[in-house]
Length: 148
Image 1 (tube, one colour):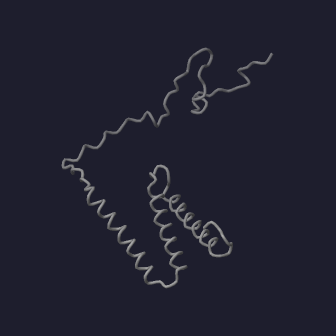
Image 2 (cartoon, rainbow, N blue to C red):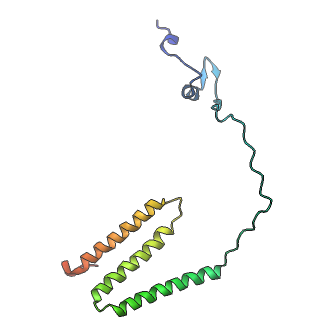
Image 3 (cartoon, helix red, strand yellow):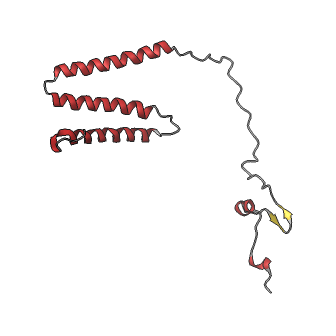
């Protein structure tokens, strides 16, 4: 008969082994002791500043006004570009490109940062611009009666 104690060596000082053992020789070893780093004394939190600044109130009217003025200036620029450019094909491609930039900006940057990293957001915006460029090429007369 083989002695079971000679087959396995159980070192309870090893963190991994100790964390995976619940009982040994009928003795309950659970819950596991904290690792030494977690048993370190807690530091006191920093005292609050004596002169705390009051939170700045946001003026929603000013924020909405700035957004509306920005959109109006952008649409005026598109209208001015349309009056200055004689070629309607170039105007069509430029307007679709600029509208895709605006749509990509609002759709990507509107996502909470917890869902997208900044690198992923910019990558998605570039991919959207590339897709719109592909749609422009498809609609450029290479395929008659194409959807774009």
